[in-house]
Length: 174
Image (cartoon, rainbow, N blue to C red; front, top):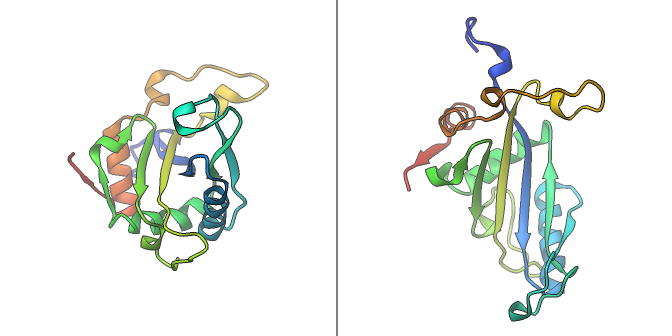
């Protein structure tokens, strides 16, 4: 960071969420949990349906996927492997203010992960959430204060340049 820049304006990754949707099949949900554990070494949680959807044979409260949230230093170890699965390319349309999302079609594209017949072939969604220093001020219990929009909202261009600089990601139009 240059000497004339404000360190409070630096962008940081708040969290990384890996999500695998499986539908109403219980065995697919178990395979998704096993895969997430294999990738992240963390215990995933079940995703439950919020509504009933008879056309997909889904009832309210049924397990329909698995997810895990990664925070802190573990993101720096995990994210390069996940980006490598997409050849360090991300679509421009996958970047929104304060977040970035991309998909991995097959988990065997991730470096260090081999095919497991018990899991089958699954893909996943990866979501990154960004924030700036000082964001905690809005959520703390004592002395909470509102953060101005210019500090809270991180625009797409800033996220693009951050990802290109930190992780060598090529943002493609489309």
